[in-house]
Image (cartoon, rainbow, N blue to C red; front, side, top):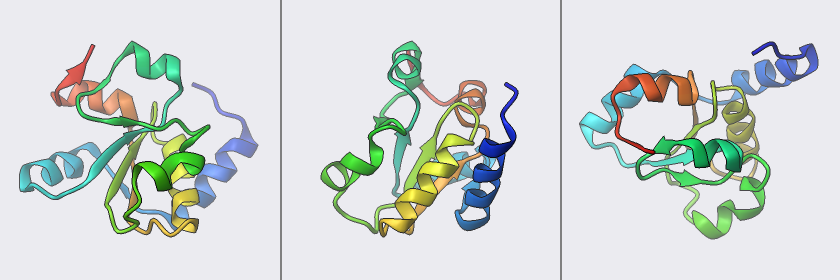
Amino acid sequence: MQHNPGFLKLVTDAKARVPEIDMQRYKEMIAAGEPHLLIDTREESEWAAGRVKGALHLSKGVIERDIETKVPDKETTLVLYCGGGFRSALVADNLRQMGYHRAISLDGGWRALKESGIELDK
């Protein structure tokens, strides 16, 4: 997908402030049993088309509004994914500002997850 320059600047700035992991590191987290919550930040239509089994859906449009109700413990490690890792970086940056200092963006997002062998729904 071709992204606009203003959007790419926002993402680049966010990525400078938030941790990001790749699919290999995420699989290592799972294998090591590192506690975390996987959150799908994609739109409802994307979620309906397929998702990672066990992921929580809080789209970019509502996560800041709903996160404190769904995940009140701000020390929870949150691994956020979107389609490719851009929107999830923006979300991780916003959550960091809200006190969720363990918000991590998954580079490659849904595309990487689909190819990883991780169990999916749909």
